[in-house]
Length: 611
Image (cartoon, one colour):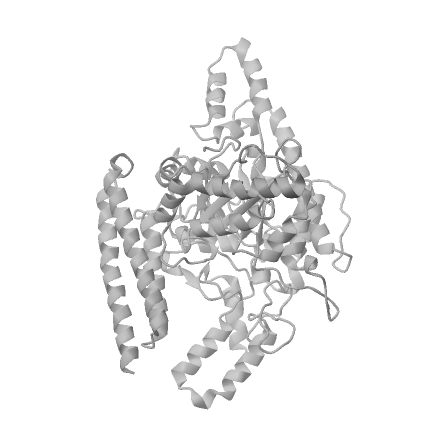
């Protein structure tokens, strides 16, 4: 089922809380879909004020202590973004078809496969009598990209009025969802980081998520998933609420930006293959549940399943990879994230951070433990957030002031949850460690200490770049900037215009300046091998029976992935003929590394058994 409703075959995923917070204003008028993070209501309010003044809209502040301010700020901002996009789109439609005009830019950026691009080419070749008529027809067919929003389902902390916990609907994610549901947007919410039963149930209280008299829902649901099983489980859970998932967005477990939710060794290629083979089964099984619930609970009869799109993101970097995902796996759209961090025309990023990313090599982009969520987090060495954290440690004041409190989950020392990156937590945790100092050798103490202080404030850090770039006051003076590129960032070093990046995606130009760039599939495989080795080494010869079983299953999944890729690269001659020798060589080398992984598992288990 190819996506006929979107002008482009790519989308820009959410990046941090700030990098894409106003990206739709910049790219939606050109038909490009992008995603806003709406969890940080304070940043949302700051950007609402900024864009109201920039685009001459009236601005009335919504103060944080006002009733339901979190959701109301989000609704007001999304409505403003929608109004600005419509205004810019109307202006674009009225521009003339001449070189460098906005309407020309719209059509020139479309993929060559687009029927609309074909009509545009025909218009250019028409005689003067027909050209004006065809131009008017083209104007009528222009549509904007979607203004989608993202909610990390884990970021759903309880909020308080004084010492009294507020009802669940005032939780962070619940309030963000309400803010989106009450907006005038007709778009999608991307739910990431796994199933949140209470939040999913809360969605069913908003009519916009259900089909209207025409059979269409004004608000749609996109699930970010790691594999087919996750899609089926979460899709069924929502279907039982009468809610339809309009898109399953598959993301690489490790070859992605931001938080990395690793699978148990299941690689992207085999995962996509399973979706390809079972796509119709998935839709049918969900529709059976959905239509029954909708009929029984709402008296609505749906004759056929609404559209279900399958999209993918994580590590794609060339036109050939992009096209292969679309054509071979029948993917509807491909997410291009990290490369857009080098496109100031599309995202909000300060000059210092963009230079850091532009110069970053493979070894400087790494999977860290800096996130207070306790989930591995892709980042880059040398960020100002990292430097700020180091200065605090050197001054004997590790931990950041907890200003926004979105990642407060720990209750080791307090009844009310606090953040592990906070000064409040780290001071107490270091004291606890010092009390046990005599029980630990120097190396063990150092390791435990570093594990405490490595946590970074992401709530503030991921929003600071947009504030710095737009000359907006930093939140309570904290200036460190955190950034969340994926490993793919290493192969992009050119600061590009929006059109240059789009032309790269569609194969009209090439902005990858590095001579050697591994294929996205082999790069992910390498990341998983390194990840598994790290996990084995952490056991330090103390491998339990359950850990042994887990590591063996993980390694076996990687072996199956290698076999799948060898067969794929060998059988599809037209897609891989030019690079097949290199791909097979990469796989052979990685297969040798897997043998070492296998040996490491056995070696650690034997060591544990002896001890």
